[in-house]
Image (cartoon, rainbow, N blue to C red):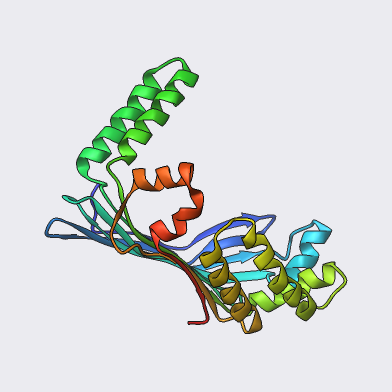
Length: 259
C-alpha cells in the first residue's frame, strides 16, 4: 500500500466524562525516490491525564514525579532502498515535557522485496498448518534462515533528560529512606559491580564513566553500536551463542553521557 500523505484530526479517549488520552493530530508522508522511499510521521499534541489513577501507591508516584499530565509528541523519519534492502530509521523519538526525549535509530540491510515475499510465504504456510506447535517451529526455522540475509549497519538509543532523572532519584531514595544524592552515590558504586559480572572490561569502564557523568548532572545518555564494517546477522547470533562477551566489540558498542 503506497500513499503520499495520511492524516487524522483530533482523537480522544473519554472515560467517565473526562478525556484521559488525546491526540491533536497525526500525519505521515511517503515520498518516492530513485530506488526507494523516504518517510516521516508525526503525532502532535499527545496528552495523557494520569490524575484519575486510583491506586494509592501509583498515585503517590505520579504526583511526586510530576506526571499527573503528560504532554508531548512522537516523530519518525527514515528511508528504504528497495534493491539493497537498506532500511534506515533515522529518528523514532518520544519527546515529553518535563520528562525527556528518547530517540531510537537503527540501520540494517537485506530487507529486499524478495525477503518480504519469503517472509509472507512463511507466515501463510504456518497459518495453513493446523498443528500450531509444528507451525511455530517451522516459522522459527524460516526466520533463522531469512536472518542470514540481513546485515547490521548501526543503531543507537539516546535519552535527553528534561528533569525526570532527579525527580526519579529523589522519589526512589525516599522509598528507601535516603536522599536522592545518597541514592546517586550508591548507584555509582553499584554499576561497576554489576558490570563486572558480565566480563566486559572495556564496556564496563565506558558504562561506569558515562553513568557517573550523567548522574552528576543529567543531560543525556547514549548507547550506540557502529561497527567499522557492516556485520551479518549470523555473525551476531554466533557471537551471542559462543562468546557473548565479544558482542560489544563486534558491534562497536559505545556508551557516552552529556555529549
